[in-house]
Length: 306
Ligand code: ADP
Image 1 (cartoon, rainbow, N blue to C red):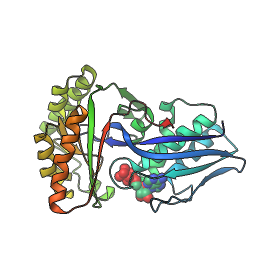
Image 2 (image 1 turned 60 degrees about the vertical axis):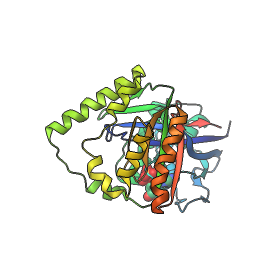
Image 3 (image 1 turned 180 degrees about the vertical axis):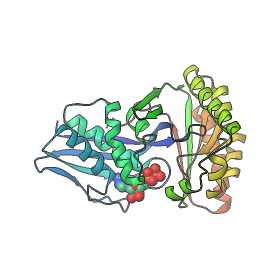
Image 4 (image 1 turned 120 degrees about the horizontal axis):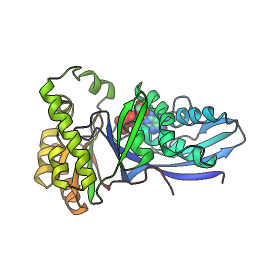
């Protein structure tokens, strides 16, 4: 095999109580990437039609992640990468992570699978270092492993794949406003009251338990963020109204996806998730802010061949 096309999923990081540690993969939102082996060494990236993204492999996360993988194997050949970019960069649903994860997954396949998906995470993290300055794993881990993932520790890297209930469906609304990741980091406080921490880790533990035991009520009770959301919500116009509409329409919980501006909700069942999407959309319809709406099951596999 010298050519493969893959689906590279969008991801939701943080998930309310899991700031910087939790993430999940989406099933119906993602990029398409085609990777082909070449004799010419290195990585070449075809011009990307949908968005203005660099084709220089040192400046595109797909190139950086792929080169990190090739270097570790001392691989002397090359790859041509074509990206159909469907996830908008800066949307807060892991646009860069999808490309970094897709590239390493596809190259690994073409090289006969020297690594497991879990072992590919550090290479994809190199792409994230390029995109945001920090080699974070909360989007690339679910993109590569599927389902929900927990980054328990970075040193040493310890990523846990979490089982989630079948009927959990995500709704994502992406208002077309720009929130710079650097701004949404800058406004965060570096300390918080112990009481907030206690509530937060209570919810994080409860959420993980709820996912394993398929306890939707418990999942709903735990989708609360006492630390980050109250600060970041001010960067997203209409956030409070969108959240209240989502909960009113039956969502288990609702919060900021990654560093925003996308807002996610989780619901039991597709029908409820679609109703939640309609309710969330109403807010931006009435304010005239353009938006994209996605409703998606949780993707159990992560990157997958087409
Ligand atoms: P999101 O907020 O959706 O997670 P990111 O902030 O992670 O998106 O990534 C966007 C940044 O990564 C932009 O600065 C973009 O130029 C850069 N970038 C480089 N290569 C890619 C790529 N292949 N796909 C998406 N973004 C890329």
